[in-house]
Length: 579
Image (cartoon, rainbow, N blue to C red; front, top):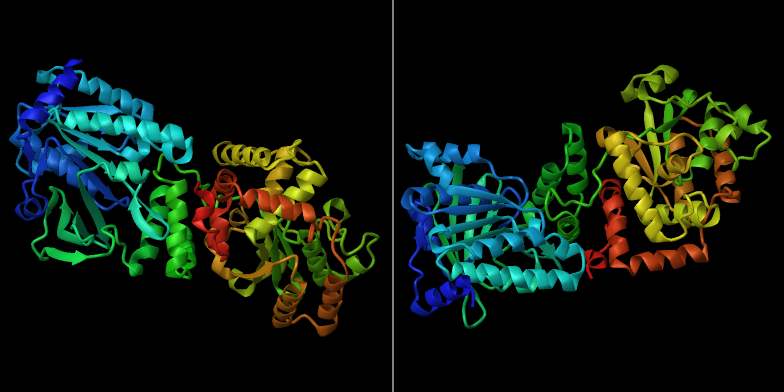
């Protein structure tokens, strides 16, 4: 039997769990009751809810009260900030802060394997070197692969880590792990599953509503109800402190201790976006406008999907919104009208429509039909196609607020399937990709290389062709800063009547004569372009394959999550990405 196991059994048998750590804030300490060796503690909460600041404060008090003891801070996401810890120590009157901080060993880990190895090494040290406090910030970052990788392997890794944490705690060490909260089935709960959640003897749930911070301590009664003690606190230059302006809230409830008030769901989702992505002020406003249109069930579903695909900032699969990508504009001078065309959104026919409105004789005299206006066949090639908003204004001789802007947008699933079946399976223009896994791998690689290296590809290359037909719609048309300026018309290949009606209404508003509107409507009613894939049996079959596979749906939503959100289409149910 090794020395660590002997030590653990001795502490357990004789009850040598005398170490009790306090925060040094009377009201908070009265509710929490201190942190004791021999028990496992979890600090769970959404990003920005005050967990790390609380633990910096606890560490400060530990160094003050236990000057001869050591602490290990396991940093799994590179977020440990010694400068912030020193600031808290100095503001709390710690005269020898720089010397005391040398008692803190920071161990960096980036995977479940690293975390397991670190805990094994800690367990094997001698009594004199054994830390009195271990903080793991955060467990979800280190164990990310257990939520999105091999489930059986992941659960075995969790079992081993939990066993190590328990042995360390019964050796006289206070063990605190940080975890996030995710939405699952519409209910907020900690990450990492039932085995992880049920292994902790105490859980502190951190909640932030606006500038109000609070900690909830749930205690389940024999009758199944929860007694929940709640204490509010504030975060200052001195760390987490008692909030003397609010009373503690002790209450009994059958609800969840992770409760997120309905009126803050939109704020929670927006805070996640702002934390994970670099967004301009205008882009934040665009996302806010989109999120505010969602009901509570839609918000819960959006949060659940986001949390599953992006459990931490360092492990986020969702591609960022509004990456600036070349857009294609078509103008009609007479009407002060501009269309932003997007591949696979009836773009060929839209080119013909805008050419007809700009210079009708060119379409009427073209040797190519209304449905064959692509590449150099375009009757208005280079005539009504400015490539920037500066050139649009020059072409129309109008200011931005005098220009009517519109775009045809499409349900992300329908658009993807249209491109996949037509461009990949039929035309074989996707670099040989003939299955969904292949095209997702290509799109993921292309997206990263475009965002990091600016690689788009030359005209005619597979890269540029695939990018043009598949990359997110929200990256086009400067939607991030101008979405509210557009008239968005939803294109559904199986509902031409609604599309014709919406276009007729738009054209009438900008002054297009009835004869011209009728000409366009008749064309839309009479035929389709050769690229059309509406009604294809293969398309439906491939869609069923995609929707029946959680791993494929995760890759799909990583790419098109923000297309659903920004363009107003309901997201798939979160259950479709969870095995």
